[in-house]
Length: 352
Ligand code: ADP
Ligand code: MG
Image (tube, rainbow, N blue to C red; front, side, top):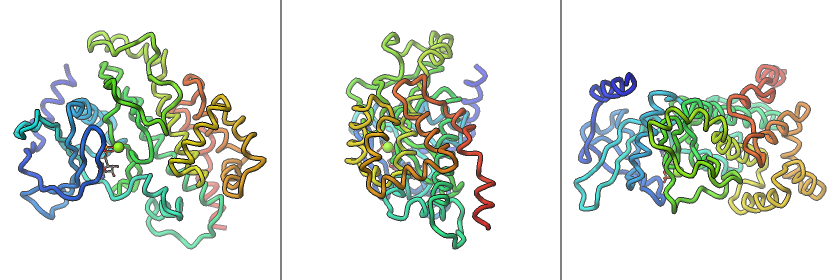
């Protein structure tokens, strides 16, 4: 009830918007459940608050609004700044949900990873001016570490709130120019297990490029999300039993892999990797054994990066990409992994 009243009061004092307040700009994306535009506020063109993003969503938009409202109250820094969501009923169509966020920046991690210069292009964005340091594995590793840490930090926020994203991929990670950090976007497929809001329409397919091998985040013993009052009592138990957050960890592990291996960054090479990994029983060590002997220089370089400092990068990667969800590390545990411990040491070695 407290939360309900708080949400209500907060809503009273927040600006509300209607369809006519927005001027549509460039189209940023189009998925099967909605279209995304950059928009500005009609009343205050040019003002800073007017740089916004609008998603016109189908009936599933209701769930996405719920998730964004919850994130804003519980773990705001994890995701793009949500401004407002409402049901737009004036169109001839049945009604669309309109969702508004602050425009965080031009580039997703997918855009940045497409550049030949990755991860150096990201270093400049995170740190601002970059000194003229020699390019090399250690420096690349440090940048990749920073990106992965920011992603895990955002995921830890979501998971601690009880939300599983289920569609973690570079296309859904935006670089926020304001905070100079990566944030998560697109909560359209997310599940909130604490209150039982867990909606995947039957026709919805998880992105097969980044999905963990388990098809459903809850075991088949829980065929559908329980209704709200039951779920409130049960879900912490269900969470413990099924560890649904580990679905996102697998996806994050694949992103780590793609950052380390430039040759795995295209869709086709990732799909091929998935096939190889499946053939190896989802055992990364086994995969390494089969590809390393005949690996080209790019692939070898990736292993070299992960093998730095006694192989702690490889160790973390293999603890994220595992067949069994319960054997995967959590976001919180991953953040405490020694892979992230050497910030200071590395900074020192750069200065020498
Ligand atoms: P969908 O994948 O369902 O089309 P997304 O929520 O992923 O919708 O948004 C589509 C694209 O719009 C993203 O890949 C990103 O390029 C852009 N985008 C979404 N939200 C923001 C935001 N807050 N700031 C800047 N760009 C955004
Ligand atoms: Mg998306």
